[in-house]
Amino acid sequence: MIEPLEPRRLFAGSSISGTVFNDANASGTANTGEKGLEHQIVFLDLDFDGVLENGEPNALTATNGSFSFTNLTAGVYRLRVAVPTGFRQTSPAQAFYDLAANGINDTFTAKNFGLTTTGIIRGNVFNDTNPDGIKDVTEPGLSGIIVFIDKNKNGHLDKGELNTKTDSNGNYRFSALPAGTYVVRIGVPKGLRITFPATGVDHVTVHSGQSRSNRNFGLV
Image 1 (spheres, helix red, strand yellow):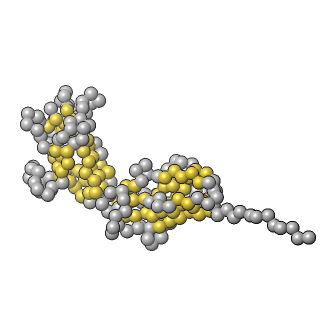
Image 2 (cartoon, one colour; image 1 turned 135 degrees about the vertical axis):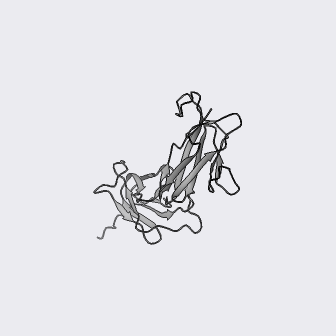
Image 3 (cartoon, one colour; image 1 turned 90 degrees about the vertical axis):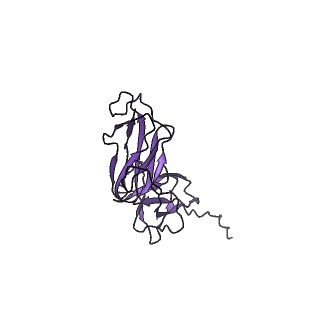
């Protein structure tokens, strides 16, 4: 007598895939014309320490920037990209993905990473009440102050020059900047004067993929 075989389930394991792309405009999203980056290292950060170590699964992106991990067992995986020198990461916002895999057949797609060679300049415009040129804890930021990059170095905000206004906390930010040296100024409201920097202007050198923070201005 031939006994029927019991049905068997085939487990393919979990999979993760995505793309590492050149985020030329630093928007955090892959836009038309922004190509994938090949030979980028993507890894599963098993100990959640942010560093690629021996024994941690990793993959190199293909010519179109794509990568994948397959046959993963059940568990929580932290997916990261190793940011190369001269780049900074623009997406995802928290710099990684935490994925809970069932180890059977679930699939995680479009886990993309943006990298850019552009830089950032950010800082604060504050009410320097003492006035010592140092932003103290009790000195609030000033909102609505114009901050601009004085491209022609004439001391005035001209048409076409990058500019922004400080937010409710006095913070400002310029992103997607090519490597170079920038002259940063503020529009000084009537009745106020600059206490910092002493010259009233900040010369900021930004290298490829660099973020320059705490480029502050004091007003009193």
